[in-house]
Length: 292
Length: 313
Ligand SMILES: [Fe+2]
Image (cartoon, rainbow over all chains, first blue to last red):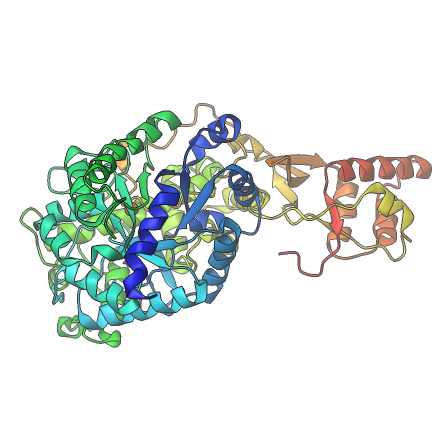
């Protein structure tokens, strides 16, 4: 990617995509029957990378009316294991099918020696780990032929071996890989609470021009830490942080994740649309259509 | 041998790999009966010491508590995923034995792909390799159930190929015609009447994967079965398939099962018909031929027949 054009290119994604929600099973019937007006849906890639059965048949129907962006949980860029070529091939097929202009997965590891834990585990923040992760992102991006947005995960632990902060690590990875950032504002908030840092220091440091997409979601506050549950509305603190990121870097495609105790389609979509107020506030101060 | 925590600095790919191996092995260690992290690692080392070597404590959490979050996350997620895919098995053998089975199975066959739908693929093999795991009767019935629930997953996951019509069949030479079965079809000979135990219906979600941090167990009590079914030995034959995007279990007679099995194995239509007719020797031959024609028409309407391929999936 040419660095000069990244910000412009990614802000154009916002113009085309705007605000969307995650496609979830309880809403299928409503969506297919009522065809509600939604700008785009995000799907969990791995749920649609099967052999062509029911999920893929349903996806075909959704694609007749909606834009869809695949969001993966299975590439594990931070695992020392090499990328799974078979997985990448299936993902590329899905990218071609959805005609998505970008794709995303996480800044995490989750497998070793070919054994998977089906979880997004945090990285030790070392240069060697950043280099290896960036190399794998680059390799995947070259193969998939669309920009990758790598997402900051929520985490509950920090390694003794870490030599840098999370934001330094993220920056090192995305600059080396020359890829995008899927900035999950909820995860940023959760981590700032769980690990005791200032989320604004994070925003001061990371290259905001590389942000390709936002995630917003709800979390649960437990006695000792915040759990990233995606089972309730977005907290006020997260909305405020979202407004701040937009003020600094401009709007990007924004997606609400709601994965558990899922309410009606309308309720989820209305929650997502609250993002509009922050986007409008930004745009009213930028008469020429936004910074780039 | 105690692990040298100095070697876990993650300053090069080799030490990063060592660190990942150790963390993964601790996360995969089964929880204790109170759903808490165990005291000892598999090799006898205290987990607390290892956790302290790996993770910084926070203001509110010890290193061990931080590791425990991931240990619980893994097991809650796995148990939930297995419960989704094998709820019939869980009901058949009971929740406690189900959990023991999942733990032992994952020890022998850990997840080897990034697709959550693949996690139970070796469960039948595991039960056959460990014939005494559940006791003789339950074990046999459990194998039936695993095969049935995997077949339902296949009816969910596998594609539809273009069908062939009755006309295609009639116009072809039976001696040369090989007919394929749709890849979402499974032919099962079952020893027990286990279908009653499929409480949650036939739909497999197969879509358990999400980015959500944790399966929050506080709100997810496993569904309690309301009725009790006696386990009955009863040999029978079923075809598990998908029709208009919905999975079904269709009971068939033994000769029909044999007929379809032969087609699936690549025998010609002529050979499969021969087997059907000889398998039906108690009846008048022309009646059998009529019946065969009826069955074939029904299967064609159900869209079961497609062009024959060597390796279906
Ligand atoms: Fe996210």
